[in-house]
Amino acid sequence: MASSPQPDELLEARYGRQAVPTNIIWNEQIEASNLHQWSVVAVSAPQTRARLAELTRGTEFPGYGFLTEAPCVLLWVADMSRNHAISVAQGHEPVATDYVDAFLMASVDAALAAQNGLVAAEAIGLGGVYLGSLRNHAQELAELIGLPRYAYVVFGMAIGTPDPDRPSTVRPRPAQSVVLHRERYQARPAEEWVEDYEAAFKDFRAEYGLRDKTWSHAVATGTSLDYMDGRENLRRTLEERGYLLG
Image 1 (spheres, rainbow, N blue to C red):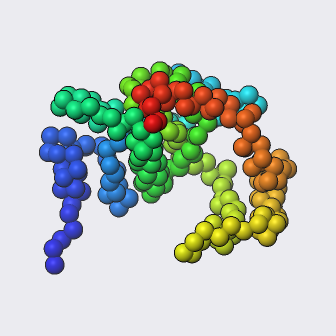
Image 2 (tube, rainbow, N blue to C red):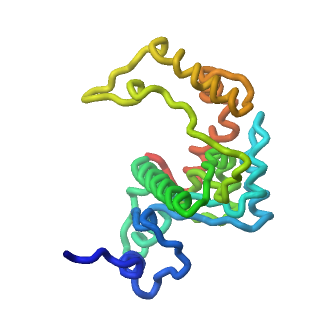
Image 3 (cartoon, rainbow, N blue to C red):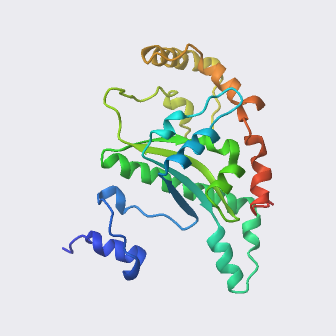
């Protein structure tokens, strides 16, 4: 029976002999791999993290001040810039990058890479918080970290060591029958399931001292224009960065 590949062999296969990283904490989760339409910018400089905290603010949201305390903030980038440049250098016209599908592929790749990254971080005792609010000021963020065209930050992720004095738990979720469909999509009227979920949602918020509100209200306010806090300008930002979204 053949033996499993060793970490050095896997890293060399992935990066090539000349570019093998030497500072990786190895575990089974690190073995996962992804495509090449994403990048990640690791931010640890205090002044930059402070600016990131400012960029998470919204009209009625004070922002995430804890970013000034997190040792590192990872900015996950949907990145078609390399593929675009390689195509141009070879004399081709990279028209595919002008279409929605390219934007979607790069965004999905970044999300998959981030999920794998968080799983790996948790496997070595770290924790992470997703930061979708960094899209509120997508252009300012791109300029802050010097992103090229055909690249934008899908979301951020604060990484650090969990505080044992501030335990967390799994948030309540709708019943599987609401989100799991077999063979065909089966829409369920809200009155069949929302009441049960609201009860779990209310209990969770009460247990952790969160302000009293219903999930339905959160959904309603979360789909309003006021909630977007600048994200309504995201399409314009993407077009300016090269994604024509045809």
